[in-house]
Amino acid sequence: MTSQTTDQAPAPIDPGVVEQVHDLARLARVAARELALLTRAEKDALLLALADAIEASAAQVVAANEEDLTRGRDKGLAPNLLDRLSLDEARVRDVADALRQVASLPDPVGEVVRGSTLANGLQLRQVRVPMGVVGMIYEARPNVTVDAAGLGLKSGNAVLLRGGSAAASTNAALVGIMRTTLQERGANPDAITLLSEGGHDAARALMTARGLVDLVIPRGGASLIRTVVMESTVPVIETGVGNCHVYVDASADPEMAVRIVTNSKTHRTSVCNAAESLLVHQDVAERVLPGIMAQLASAGVTVHGDEEMLRYAAAAGADHVAIVDEDDDTEFLSLDISARVVGSLDEAIGHIQEHTSGHTEAIVTADRASARRFTTEVDAAAVLVNASTRFTDGGEFGFGAEIGISTQKLHARGPMALPELTTTKWVVEGDGQVR
Image 1 (cartoon, one colour):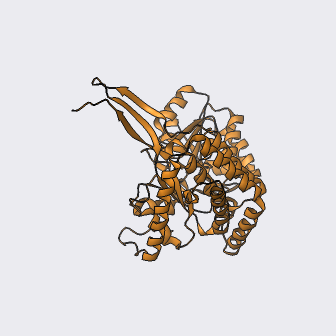
Image 2: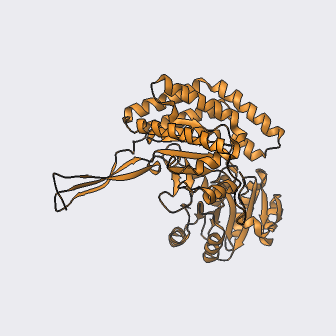
Image 3: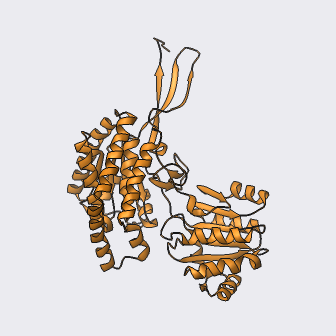
């Protein structure tokens, strides 16, 4: 999807596509009402059945994925996008295991958030309930197809999935397996629906199906997220891009700094919690930068640095270029990193606040006062002390699969899992009270 300019109205949506998407949304609403009646044991049994079916069909999924990869290579899809798209049998097993992890988690539905008994005897309970129908609009990440379906099922929500065309064959195979399994188990297959036709108009019809769809979650690049946020008439949870910083403070342990920076940048570059920016206090630069640059050089990272940073990069043999203003705001998703030497903690915090995307920011320090200031003043969904940015993840946090990482401040922030796919209702019980 491409974003619309502010002075240009979006083109009309094909009425036939709107009707088709709305019909599927109505079927999903019926399925959602049926899901809301299932017990935790029944939902967990379905999740385990889905996991087993996907794992048993790994060869089918990998074959479909190879079709997508072949088309992607022919179209010149970037290496980082091909990596996100790729599924081998090991990754298929990981996708299935994510469903098993979701099955093992507590069911949020029915949880009492708070409650009390009023002076007049009325008993109040605020309880978690499913959202209803959740729409997912996402790019070349077939694991999102399964994660969204599993989290939706566990939290009692039907899901409408609009994946990117780059993963069309893989998504169709995965959703086909899951719908067949639900039907065989006596559950409504419309709990998981793939919008496989209609192109961009299908996505636009989904995000304007107010009254039929309760929530839309975009997951992908900045352009897709911006388009959904600006054009949707359905409530949106904004998942943001990850311009994540690692700041190495004056008191940082050099070996720890090398490990954290290297892992944050190179562990997997195509994900939103990979570090894209490095800041190093001038007082520790001489002690930490030779080691950091040596590790970045061995991983093939290109350093987009200021004058002092480039001197260390050159000495270590790392690929390097002079930094430009745009680099400070870039989510590279590749073996590139912007890097600057700063004169103080204040300068580091100021730089992060100016350029952060609000996803994850990390400090490496032995100074507890510096850590407290950093965690208090830096405004992000996750702030880490002496740990890699790669830990900002639903699975790593113990939430099981995640449906996205929210960088907004309303309803949900950070890795979103089961509780974030619920809302609440007030249940009030009396014995004849009138006002």
